[in-house]
Image 1: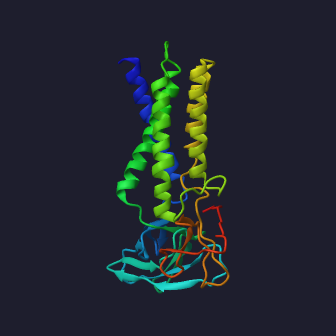
Image 2 (image 1 turned 90 degrees about the horizontal axis):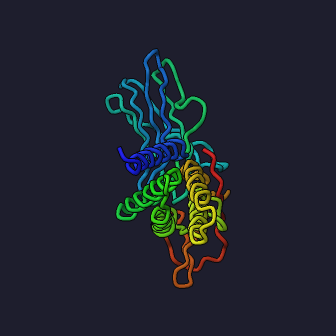
Image 3 (image 1 turned 120 degrees about the vertical axis):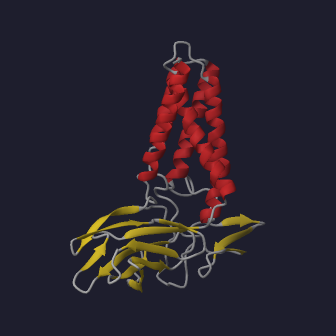
Amino acid sequence: MKRPAVFWILAFLLTIISAVIQRITGPTYPVSGTTTMQGKQIEYSFERSHGGETNAVVRIEARDSSIRGKVVWKRYRSSDEWQKIDMKNDNGMLSGELPHQPPGGKLQYQVLLDDGVESISVPEKEAVVMRFKGDVPLAILIPHIIAMFCAMLFSARAGLECFARNPSYKKFVQWTIGFLIVGGFILGPLVQLYAFNAWWTGWPFGGDLTDNKTAVALAAWVAAAIALRKTVNQRKWVLGASIVTMVVFLIPHSLFGTELKYDSDSSRHAVSAGIVKNGRKACISPVSGKRNFGIFIERPKLLAGMKD
């Protein structure tokens, strides 16, 4: 097998591994595990992200029609009292609904199971935190994912090119920068807009690591492109940019993402971000969670930290 083909295979494998690690370590990846009740094993998988304007359904397969369940929940980082929702038991499948929240809003929840003899909490130790977001059209989301995957792929391929006898970096650097701009700075902000009513939540407006790490990767590749023009230490700059990109994209996705800060007054919600349109700022309705374009006087409050 020729060396270029080997490099492409290695680059693809590195990209896949990086993407999987980024996904499964992120704060939106489902919480799953097993517990036991009366000696019987119960498996569970609870979502930590919900899109759209519907309530979030929590399900667990108890495999026993006699088991009763409740979803215990409260708004995240709030002084609310815990609420309880009875779950329906449909032939051993328990289900209950968490109330819809505006984009960026979070609820923490646990499931309580009771069979009349034993009561358990699932998960046992910590409540699951779910973040709500708006629906992102697939016509935007899919190209965004493909572009970011290609950016990681060409970045890895450029780094491997450094080990060639007569390396040729230019086309790989150009493709990497192109995919980063399209995926991270054109389609990425559109995804953010639909999901959280915000174009950009990284520096200097917030601490969203997803936005910030994309900016760091692009800066590294722009520096490498400049080095190619000056023909100074090209190998070091390209390899350095590739390593920086690999490292930043190993950071869990959505870490320190947009989070709605709930006011002490439950009738008022601070928004995750505002949108300027025709000189007016958009705010989110605390009832419907939809965008309302009106005069927005109070500065939106941001809670850009997240630790699930």
